[in-house]
Length: 231
Image (cartoon, rainbow, N blue to C red):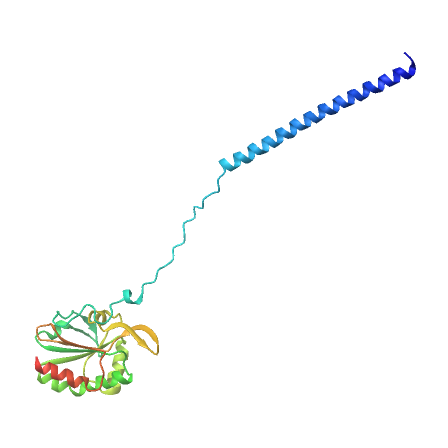
């Protein structure tokens, strides 16, 4: 074989070996890539199956629900009607000590509930009942004034206007609610809870004889006196 022929044959052999090696590398690389893709796919699939989104174990925050005004307290007119037994009470009064319903057993009793001491309407009303105190006594009837003012405020009210009817302090609104004198009011378009001017006449047997709600002050004390005389 000539030198030129041996060189050509050698080159062909080298090329074939290189081509085989390349095919082998390609196959290996393809298999490796395929394995890698399969592993990634399996890993991805396993993650989706075995690692679900964690549900939050944090308890939902509780919001405080405020009671509607109508449910928070008794509105005027609820819980008391004419002919019912007058609710018992024991509350502090001006000058010290306390007053109870039982103190007036066997007598008629006028309870006038007013919004606030030393305000114009309440002042006129208290003065009118003081003016007629003697007339009420002649028909065996006692008179008490009630508001949510402090005892000190009641004493100032009494002293300023020379009032002689006992003034009761119901700061917790217990008696006011029981007698239907505490409820929803409206003033200048604003709604709020407060004392509704109310008067209750209790007969000698301890029952509610008459109720005046949303009282108009002018002439009211005289009307109550006439009602007490008719019992």
